[in-house]
Image 1 (cartoon, one colour):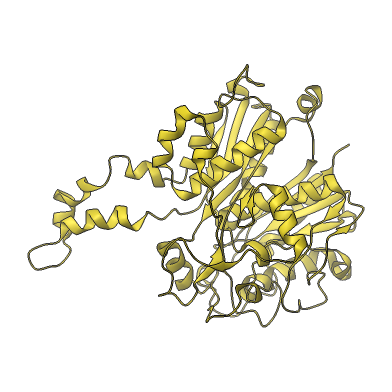
Image 2: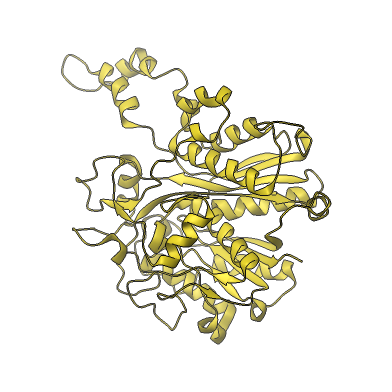
Length: 429
């Protein structure tokens, strides 16, 4: 994974367990004109460090989101002990048996690229003109401009680099994208169309257009010089909003017998997957109106995942929820968890990531799944950051790293727009 804590799982785990948030003032651009000027930046991350020399020229046509996915995918290959087309030697799997499913968001163009072309469509009256844009202005965009910002470019570059010629897909369902992609990979392997898949998601909205969109959607907290770490407080009735983060989490999903045959290091097994859609309408896009008491789409997703896993809510040892930090979204998510888990919910530990790394949107589900798999493999939960007080007795407040007997972990998220996804991961072996 790649997050504001740095490159790799160890960086995130250590950061959370230290009690230090990675949220801070935005440096990627001048955000002083926005009410929210803080976020979680993945500083110093470049795809140039993660691709062969022969591929480095293509980094020029990678948007930030794509770079995050490419870096995370490279880490996943190394950790899984796979040989792919990006490495040396005979690939572990034939290209046609390798799939790729990566969640992506609505990528924003770099303003310099767009405005330099827009400026050439200014008429004699000093105003921008559509006729001038169509006749000459648009021709001043770089030739491969569109290919840089298509959402499927994340999966495109990963498949080209690593030689994945099996089933490939891109899912664009905001925060639910990563978990939905994991479900897609599991289904592809279950029906025998691939033996291994790259899966997860990545996104960065830390750019002027991304921050503007989320500001207009009512999602972001006003910073007003406050310590960013004090603002993101999941399930806290007094929370004022979210902070955006950059993030990408890619997992190698592999057919169990094939993984065992090559002696792969297995962190966890996908036991069950479920998806759902809330009937909230346009309120879910603008977060207006009364917050939902229960996110019915998330309830359905969790129940389907539990059903496929063949287990009850009483057999889940920990939950990695989305924990957005926005009262409107947290209310529906907490209500859904309460409906599924009942009175037991207060005794089930939640692993919350947003206070440390911010809202990673399409990258969130992949990062959550990586953390959940690591929890099962290590028999531990990372530290938890919280500057407030979670409501309704949820086990989501500040806590140190701790050992815990874990057999099954639920990962779940709702999203902007109402798509929901849930996965039950089980301890390997």
